[in-house]
Length: 233
Image (cartoon, rainbow, N blue to C red):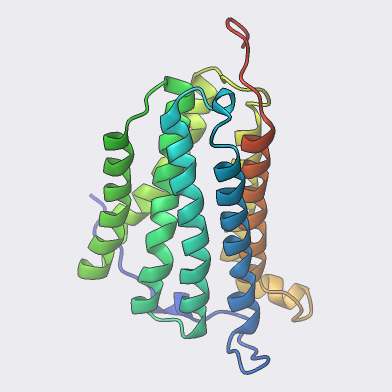
């Protein structure tokens, strides 16, 4: 049985620690703002299109995406706060909105692919996401958080592979998941990428930018898709 997964303190030592304009770890701090930008943009687009019921088969799906983009914007704030002075306490404020975002996206996909959407279900998933971070913060055990992040992503991909899309360009979710996978690889090779780019760009900074791009691609799909006609896969 897998024992507790403790937070490796080496995680807080990032490759690019350069300061600029008095801001420590400037690149990782500023690149976090990309999440705020895409999150707020998503909220604006969803708010403007809230009366366009035809774009959302179930109202619960709109609510899930609304909560998702709120979480994304807050993740940008939490990430910037963490990278100013990386430690476990600040990392909790980074991971909390990330966990919430994954749970909200899972709720949105369940709504679309399974026709399951309820406020209680969304709130339950949000509570599970929050609990995973609180558990790590209290017991220094990352297992619930890892399950929330990677388990929800796996569930999203499986649901999209197993059940037919109800909107046009339903394949987009696979491209978005692949892009996020690339971002995670960049995170793993933070120092190596920093060296390969001659100190211009670290893997963690690139992870921020690619992840934000993946969320931007998701936003484009949500904004431009159309419901498929009955009987059309």
